[in-house]
Image 1: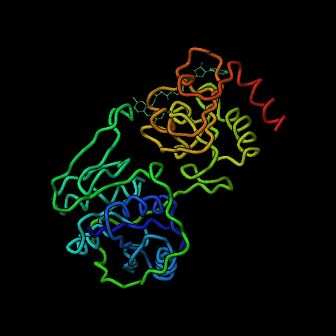
Image 2: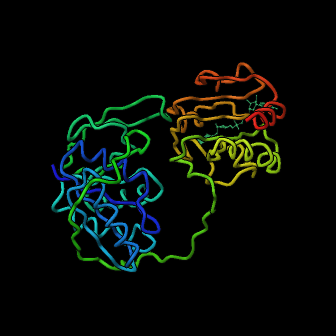
Image 3: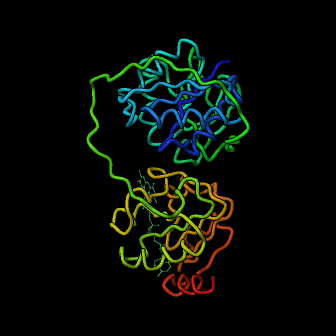
Length: 311
Ligand code: FAD
């Protein structure tokens, strides 16, 4: 089976999620990686992709139209290549989830989303009901289009490979959308979806000031990324891109610290695969304790500063 992986990259470096998607792709067949981008950054990313173990060939499509990875521009180049491939794998990230459905629609096939495991060349598992059940799905489509959940697959080794890099024809600007602007938050902290430790705060923090006064110093001590429940985000205590859960980010760090978070199923859907879950909550019956490995029952306004100080 021949498999194409769409590489996600930024500033010339590969995103960790793509390394996981490459691992998933190697379970299906020979892996070629497409880097779409503009100029030197795309070239740099292609060179990085060529070193990833498991990648047999890197294709590079360079055009200013791919600089912002607009789905309307990137989907046509993928479709133009899919004649040579049996499957396309994208990350189940905002970028992959934006592009893959467009490719599936243009190929007139059914996308399989959020793949957790590869059971065979046409059979995959994926979460349903906010992760409360895992469905095994079989696709009879001639070409498979999958989005892959990064936390479900180990990252492929970023060094050690030596794949050839081949230039493919760019399809240019489809003229269907244009880039207006991007607002990104810059942080010294590790990225939420790939951090080894995540400290998340919930509604109980009560205000943005208290959220940052309590959660940030604890996260700094633990070299952790900061996350939040949707209630905390909706209340404006934390920015949108902090949200962990069904409609936020999926994380599976080594340690997840949930501070003043009740443990609603929609929140658990985003973090329950974390290796060690620590919960701090004043309600001993809070559902978060059902998934927690370590639980502290008490007032977070006392416990969190105490832990931070001790660390
Ligand atoms: P609450 O449920 O209000 O819990 C606050 C907790 O803090 C309580 O357990 C309380 O005991 C504890 N507490 C209060 N004061 C203190 C104190 N002083 N010290 C210690 N503990 C204290 N939610 C997400 O998080 N992510 C999602 O992606 C998401 N997607 C959703 C999608 C849909 C379609 C829907 C319907 C809901 C979604 N939700 C999501 C919302 C979810 O159902 C919950 O409402 C939300 O997770 C609750 O956030 P919370 O735990 O911070 O708040």
